Amino acid sequence: MQTIVQVFDAQQKNKYKLRLSSAKDRIKKLNKLKSTIKELEEDIYAALQADLRKSRFESALTELIFTYGEIDFAIKNLNSWMKPRRAGKSIVNLLARNRIYYEPKGVCLIISPWNYPFQLTMSPLVSAIAAGNCAILKPSEYSIATGAVIAKIVEKAFDKNEIACFEGDESVSKALLKLPFNHIFFTGSTAVGKVVMEAAAQHLSSVTLELGGKSPVIIDETANIKKAAEKIAWGKLMNAGQTCIAPDYIFIHQSKLEEFITLYKSAAISMFFDEHKRINYSAYAKIINQRHYDRLMGLIADALQKGADMPWGGASVLSDQTIHPTVLTNLAHDCKIMQEEIFGPILPVIPYNDLEATIAAINGKSKPLAMYIFSESKSNVKRLLKSTSSGGACINDVLIHISNPNLPFGGVNESGVGSCHGFFGFKAFSHERAVLFQSPINMSNMVYPPYDNKGWVLKMLKKLM
Image (cartoon, rainbow, N blue to C red; front, top):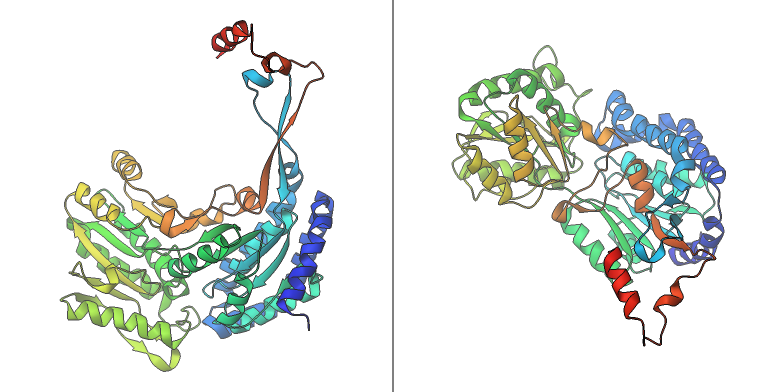
């Protein structure tokens, strides 16, 4: 078995060959990836069930169909993405042709998380292949079953000198991060993202960091509360809340608070409970491991200890790593659940009367990966969008902006660096190279030394500018 360094060195040698690959070559590789995934679909479903208790439908919707869509979109558009793009001219190169070439960055590292372990490995891999790179994958050690299937897919579809996968614990990630990759694509927590960025800085490797944060929801007095409750229940509780863009906490107009809690509870029960109002394990995922289970239960305990109310939920089953959907209100500002990303099925709900105060509260936290606004007031929507910052936003819905490959997906500052999906993923793994083709008619000598008697040149340039 080849070591990490041996595989890395082989890819470093092979990257120059891949630089010459055509769209046809890359499309062939993407098709091979797709056919290998299809061949091992049942293994993927079983792995996601083992790691997260994901239902077949949820796994298909959020992991497989999403991945197939990324592959198909890249195949459909790759020819146009790879073509040099025209760039405008300036005064000093009026007769030249200006182009932007997209060249592969080289050897890339993709470190993926455990919450959507298949999709969040394959999506950046598709972009890396489309851009003509070599890549080494490091799946999360927490989603061990899915990591094993990913390794199997990579081994069947590619030579190691092009795409390779290394499973293992934190020590494997540390070993990989010591190497001078041309680009690192990391998806995970902000804390680990800082470690990755620090390691990348040692080699001046470029990075794409897909992180997270506390994605807020604002529901004003004009919103359709029933629809908002249904959409938020789905978006919050899918994968048991273990989604980087899940609604983290809610600001709701005081007049709609009780109605929302009632309707949220009703929507959640209809989606994730059986006819006896017991958790439906075939629809509701589990918490990934006991460490995260204990962390989430600790957040609830801390909030309650500091005076929070719990109008619904709080039940849990350690043996099944299951925490029931939970709503918290009357939260103290200093409770832990309002300071850190929840990443679980717990929903803090905060009433407001003054929208400006709500905007100030959101801006008082780090910029989130997503923001969700429920309102029928165009002026309120405009005001919220202009007054805040987030990686992405949805109006009158949650999560679904990630499903459009024509939109960039990424965070800002603590919620991420760079963006991905579709052409934006292709760009993340490409260097935009400026190329100027000079005209045979040489006008450059007008600015060559000596500078005696060149005053007329300066006058002409000033007038043209």
